[in-house]
Length: 119
Image (tube, rainbow, N blue to C red):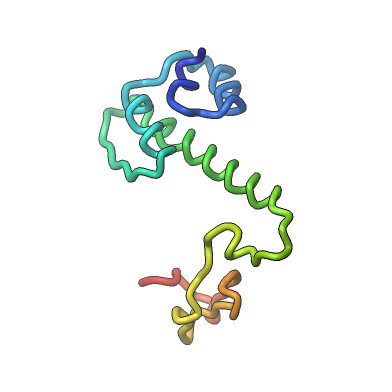
């Protein structure tokens, strides 16, 4: 069993990590990866070269992959996409600079200098 597998990292990512000759996770990775994959919030400080980027990037890539795969596999037209993936914006967040579609699935800037939905 690969050391990264014990942390909950998916086989495709483990294969990529092994191609980089990462055989064992660094301390920061061993602590942060399971927490992030479990939905926890993590804030860490460590020396340069300690593996912080891997500690945050590996679970991020896995979560995005699993989310996109789940959305792609979704084939139930009876449910709206928002109900299916649990993500929907509130139409109450509309303002002069920020437009949200009635279904809550699409947002759009009404200004060229938009800097985000929340200031």
